[in-house]
Structure formats: C-alpha cells, structure tokens
Amino acid sequence: MRFILGLFLFITTLLGDENMSIYDIEVKDIDGKVFTMKKYENRVMLIVNVASKCGFTNQYEGLEELHKKYFDKGLSVLGFPCNQFLSQEPGTEEQIKEFCSLTYGVEFEMFSKIDVNGENAHPLYKFLKESSKGVLGTEAIKWNFTKFLVDKNGKIVYNQWNITGGSVGVFEGNKIGRAKNLEKLKSEIDNLESNV
Image (cartoon, rainbow, N blue to C red; front, side, top):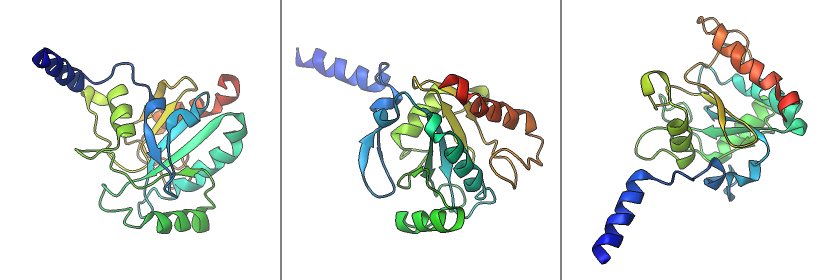
C-alpha cells in the first residue's frame, strides 16, 4: 500500500497540478510582504520582468502611464525585477524601489527580485511559460521587459516573447521591425475599457 501511495505521489509531482491557477501562486512584493496572486482575481494583469540598467529601462515610464490610465478600470501592472540578463538588475530591493520611484515615478506594484529562467525560476514564471509557449514551443524568457497580459479570469491572452520595443515608452519607438506585435499588445491594452 505504501508503494502505491508513494508511486501516486511521485507521478502527481511529475505531472504537476493541472487544476492550479495563476491565483494559487505566492509572490513577495518589493517590501517583503508575501501573498497569493488571488489578490488580482477579476483584474487584468500586465506582468513584466524588469531591470534598471537595461536599454529598455525607460519602458518604466510607459508602464507607469498604463498604470495611471487603467488601474481604476481594472488593470494591474506588475513589475518583477530580474538580474538574469547581463546582470542588468544588480541592486537590492530597496535600491530598485528607490530608483523606480525617483527616476520614473513608479507607483505600480513592484516585487522582490526573482529568476525567470532556469532551475530557480519563480513559480509564477514557470506557470506563465508553461501556459503560453513561444515559437517552436520554447519556454525561455529571452530578455528584460517581456510582457504577459492575463485577463480577469486568469487566462493568458497575450505574451510578448522578447518583443521589448524601442526607446520611447512601452509601445512606441520600435526600430527593430516589431511594430505589428507591439500594436497587437497595445490593442489588447486599449480594449481594457470594454473587457473589464
């Protein structure tokens, strides 16, 4: 009987919990408070891995604009600092919070620094990547400021795999031929008023 129970536990661990939702995942905010993503149930989420020393860091400005424009309509912009891409987020949570606040006036929710790839990837990013694979089934986040748009029911409706835009805001200034993808993401955000 123990063998059967052990085998069952082993198999369910390998397969994971198919009924798990994004709302079951624990996160820690930049001030160290731990809670589940259930806090964002019935809200649209724009989840972004961020970095303070990246060529795309100025996207904080555009993300803050989205926060101000749509927060009261049901959008939560969620920033997850990550130091996995050329060590472009080397600071402590306190330093990151101060930089974001003083440089970009960030008021949207920021979280503790995490890994988005590899063995130590945060459970949220494991969930996001498994639920929304990239080209040819790839799961790796390619760079900073990759975005996931999650609807108010917890379903990923758009992922922006390594489509980080250019030098102005989140969606404008694209100089690398990614305009169609950026416009698609912008359209999803612009439709919030009718979707929320």
